[in-house]
Image (cartoon, rainbow, N blue to C red):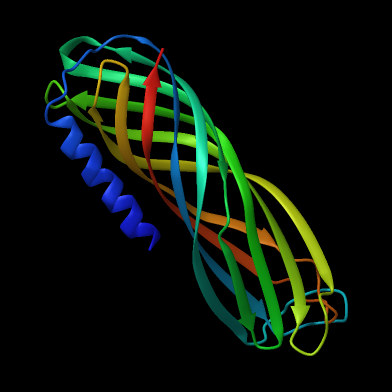
Length: 224
């Protein structure tokens, strides 16, 4: 359903942009729109132990995974420079509401991850293909805030962890001029190999969690 909404918004942006006129100028802008983030959580637990508190040894390893997509909104503030030869670059800070949540069951261990919010900074560089349409690549840093509950299938939650972690983000997008001040855009963002450890469980074993984030953003930018 979220993907259908995002696709419909992009189609609407493209339709409106057909009759628009390009007004390329440097300046500050605000952005906002829909934020769809997918979490893929991998959980690996080594069941071997060489002592009650010393952690995993050479026992069998169990792996499991889960994924979920959550929809929210985002707001941003940035500055765009129009360069020579139809190139442009921009820098933007943003805040996004996040709702994705995974529940990963590995043998008798349950690991729940709930993404609360994200914020960060993006750098974009692109090319104006026509007077109204442009494409760009992006790279940046994003701070993800999430909660993690660790429990067993036969007991209530035993550990609760709040995490604030930074991750490298990269992606690509496209934008289309709607009016002299409004630009519509859509972009896909990726963060991979994001890892954290759960607290040591009762058998002295630490479980490794790996998170991959994929995000689709669609919205508008308003230039001052």
